[in-house]
Length: 116
Image (cartoon, rainbow, N blue to C red; front, side):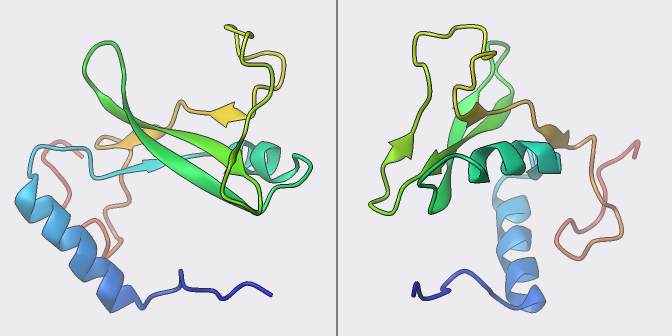
């Protein structure tokens, strides 16, 4: 059985995200993925976790790339030759960036940026 070292309090989470916002006021605050992205990753055979890579779009916008991992922490990738992403590559992206897609009521977000 794996130890769950991932759960923290809301207060700790709010402090962590506030520190990020203070240090990087103009940066992306968060990204949201639809459940289908996680379902696709977690339904792959042998999945034990998910790795989230920091990434950058061609226009310079930050994003995340998610991939399933096995019990040894190795990435589980599908067809690495599939440049269209239609063959079940095991890689997910296209997050809803915050801003502009923020939850202004969440203590993890702090004050919403202008125009939200």
